[in-house]
Image (cartoon, rainbow, N blue to C red):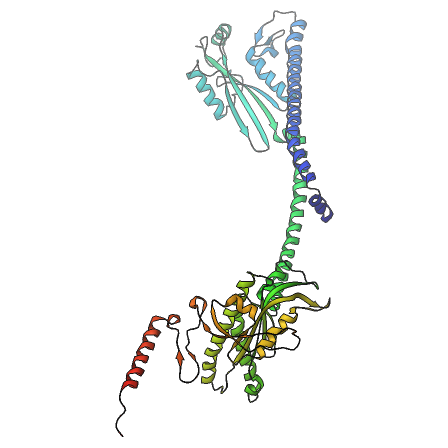
Length: 523
């Protein structure tokens, strides 16, 4: 069955052929069976007619012809013709005896002559309810129906009875009215004397075999249907098991992919699982904006912390920074101890300028968020909260899969990536240092000042770093916290604060100015 199912799946046109054959075969079998039914009906009718004619001929030869030939007396028509030499039966007697003769010879055809006026020396006829009603109908409506048909029988044997009236003619009237044994002597021409009934019986099983082709067709179609149903049931079971296995595999793969996503940046994860990138060793040269950060004095800050506390603190820091990086579209390369390496420009890029601007916005938001976390950590008892140094550089790097066929890493290499790390190393805690090319792309959104030119290990050219002082355009600045600079100076960007906060800030400044303008009391 499996082989046949696979055969049909591989060659579906054979199923179309089977359907066409079935559609053509149905009318063909019906036509063959109708022809067979017609032949069978005609055969039975011919057989019945032949039996009836034979019975009539035999009766006529025995009770009419032979009696007339063998008699020397005058021939008479009598109801008791057997008692008179040379007499022949009257029509009523002929009908009675002929009916018995036909019924004895032809089992499926019965002929009866019944009347409610029988001669005195004859037993009365037993009339059925239908026969009595038919006599009444014929007598009350002489111009009505000329016959009555009654269908009876059961589911296995049917019979049809046809009844016609026997009407008195002139000779019959004079005979009956003058006969000594006649129960009625006032007959008139046209009166209904009796009923003539013909009953034909036919078992349903006789016609059933007339539809042998149709039965054969249904048997073949049913067998084929059962075969296909069994095949479909088995296929459905196989598909159900396959679906269950597929669901289980999908759930397993979904769990695995979710776990893998924790080790990859969203962009890399998406590009791999969408098929945009192959898991093969390959690199390409692209212009990227590289970000590098680490925590100032991380070892000294955490040396007194328990491993569990350090793990929780570091994970909180990386989680917050990762959310910010993902929001700005950064590809996080790796975490190295307390350091974060990320870049913009692969696998997705918005152009060199937009990549550089997104990276700087990300760095500013990270520093602001780290300041917020510092306040929280101080409240929790951390004496020296984390302060990060950040370096950003824009330049050409090799990006792609590095490693072996068994294990590889998606990362970047090149002097420009190293330069971002060198710039981070000269940044102040809480500061951001840019290369000139990065500064050139973002100079309209930040306030930065050049630092002293420097030479870095592995970099042949002289580098002029730029240190970010403040943001000039607030549309991309998300910081709402004031920045404390040298001495007692307080710089506040009121446009970054909501109205209630600005109102409180203004009230506090007025109160401070009022106190400052009041004269000091005399000593």
